[in-house]
Length: 275
Image (cartoon, rainbow, N blue to C red):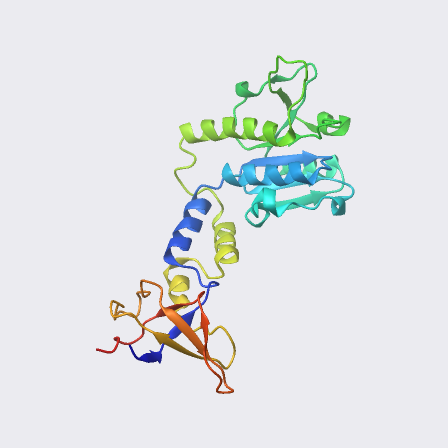
């Protein structure tokens, strides 16, 4: 086959499949379901909580910590969930919970003491923020005083506590079940402005047909490089179709040296392939 010029797209350009995945995730985000972590000092636990929140459709996690710098998320455990979940840090429980209540949330604190109801008896389909304390200290007196109700996970063993990430998973998936049964995952629930902002932040393009169409703007891997491609005979002649299978790409340097292969680039065919 002959080498010919092509329009280069690197991995930063979202594919149709990636756009569909992000759209599906954003369509199911639950802006009125929030998780609050107080006094959590173990990064592994906090990282696992972020992963669970992302999976359950929770877009926001609030952290109450006077020293947030000591909490560094483990990306191997969170699987980069910190990229998909907004994290806000507050110096005190009053700063955090007062603001959440002002947004119209009911505040439920996990607590093993008297007056706490089994977690399954709570209605999680209303706007609700669930507060979890550290495994060693639990919820602070300040956070308890600011809560609207207290919930507990029933346990019958000698140890009356669960790992933080396990507790979050148990309660969140009860909320998930209730919301799914009520059809809350069946329609967009994020405010339009935030939906569009997240779409652009996650994909680097504007939402809607116009933004997606702008992916056709040429993007070369290196300024001044000339892109040459060996196009497969099966390559589509339509400008809107990406060649499949993935083609071999070579970058021709301005110095005239031998082209070097790049396995991370896909070529979009702007002209019919040679006969």
